[in-house]
Amino acid sequence: MGSALNLLKEEINQASEKQHDLAKWKLGVTAALGAAAFGLAKDNNSPNYWLLLFVPFVCAYIDLYANQYQLRILVIARFLRTHPDKDAFLQQYEEECEQLRKTRQHTFSLGWLAGLGCSLAVSVSGVVFYFLDPRHDKYKETLLVSPHQAEWIWASGALFIICMWGYFQYQAGKISRGKSPVAQLM
Image 1: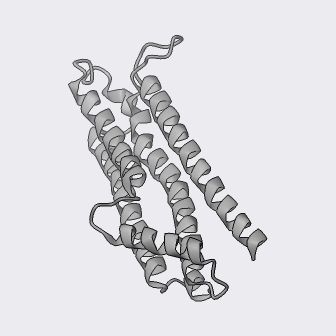
Image 2 (image 1 turned 30 degrees about the vertical axis):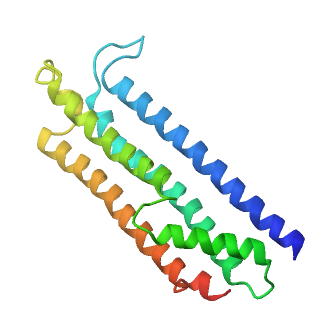
């Protein structure tokens, strides 16, 4: 049992590292899209505002992978709490963590909430900066679609981020209650 516990602990550590790497990628990719959209590249200083339409989708895509790693951690934690071959010390730790997860203080949700907040803030700020740019009327053709269509494309991306948040919350709750198919196998 000791080597299996070590493997599970290592998987949790790897999942956490991958979540941090994804957060860095999200910041880098959205910053690059924003710089290119506003024409800050050294070769071309005319804006390509249509790139802003991709920001919510990029954020949602990266958040999807980060959520997958978080759900994996929750499944392992549940397994460690409920497995019959108990390591009493580890099981007590996991029980206390579960109690903290259930509180409204979001003790273990701060990183995830920061990721969600970043996704929404970056998605909204691009559109806001587009309309604040005094030249945006001059560059309407850089959207590649009508402004109305662009708003709908952007809104669907932002809605996608919010729907993923709801789905993550739903799956995390199922894991916590032992209602997910994976959790029931334990």
